[in-house]
Amino acid sequence: MELTATQQDALTELINIGYARAAAALSDLTGHRISLEVPEVAIHGIGEIKTRLLQVIQDEVASVNQIFSGPINGNAVLLLDREAALLLNSLLTDREQRQEKLDGAAREVITEVGNILLNACLGAFGNLLKVQVTFTVPYLQVDKVDKVLRSITVEGSELEYALVIHTRFHMRASNVSGYLVIILGVTSLKTLLDELRKWEERELG
Image 1: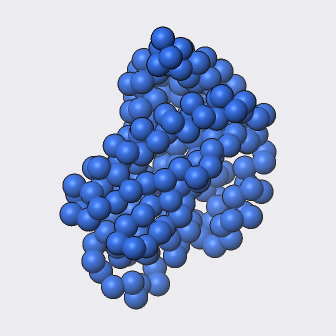
Image 2: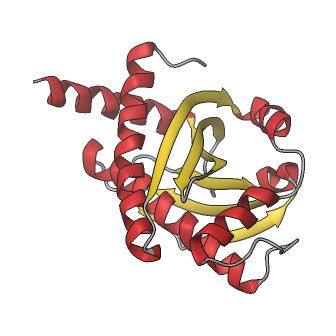
């Protein structure tokens, strides 16, 4: 499935609103100016997502997973490869980047970053689209991409589509790239696109 140009623009705008909130929260938390950029938004079938992610992430990933439910339900995941996760932790905490693996403190930092980012995006979905979205406490998983994707399930849902948002953190003259993946069923995707159209109409009206 491909988004129309109008849908892509509206969805990018909506996610950017969520990212602006997340960047402000992270800046307040760390005392450093942080901005978040959404270079690309695309929708893929669930069967394609593993292949596409493996083209850009070959090693282990740190993933922060959050299940959400309501009229739109699914699973939202922030994916960072190991180097990106270590660099992000170093930039946020002023620790030297000499670690080769994520220790307990670094895992807490990445989980909190994921929590802020996912809550901001899902909150933007709920607030601006006027739908009630509830979400679970996020959890961190460090594993290969295929194992992370295999573990993502939502009880009672037929997950068929993945909304993939290439994400870039800018801070302290450094950039860290990752991916936000929002996995949805057919009904949830239709609801999202319908509510997005209504939001656009309200904005234009």
